Length: 82
Length: 147
Image (cartoon, rainbow over all chains, first blue to last red; front, side, top):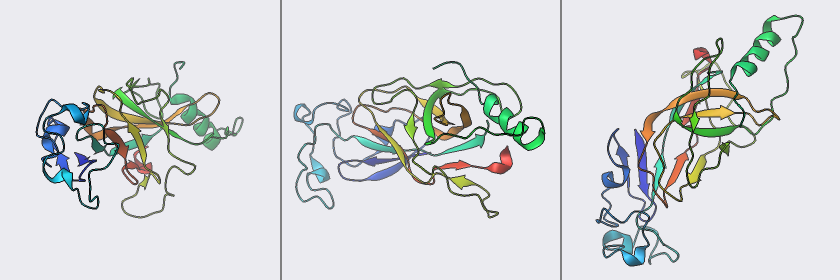
């Protein structure tokens, strides 16, 4: 299971195998499903909703150039010599 | 990178433990590196094996990323009997990635050798430009009893 966190508003969720990491997170930062990696200024829905005022960040952070990029955290078990 | 397997490393360690004639161990050069794999290799400490297929993607450099000066915690007889990574390792994707299914841990000796490998608990898929892929502290576990 992966843990994904919106890098804009810090909303977090766990992703079950087979689900799209970006679709899983329903933080409202950008409900359009075409936008990932797209410049925020060209996405009509970018930064609507709670991410206008994400927790701990009173105003929209400058320099935010992509729409809802994620932090994707994984885990692994490894074997010595394996 | 030339074809290599972990066998060279583990064979040297076995010689160190059991062979009176060649009981020296070449120093391991650190930092250890984490390499992301799109297909796992094969083999274990006692048989020949092959390396996995390393990820080739924007935002990922061949040879992996450093795990820091002291990569893992020290093993103690505790439960769970495993050591875990001391430092987080992350990559910033600048394009779409193919699915990552596991990782390998390599030393950074002149001729680097793979020291461990294992699958991620879930495949890492759907990574796109702007995303960060991270193994947080304690997210990579190494169980000495599984050798």
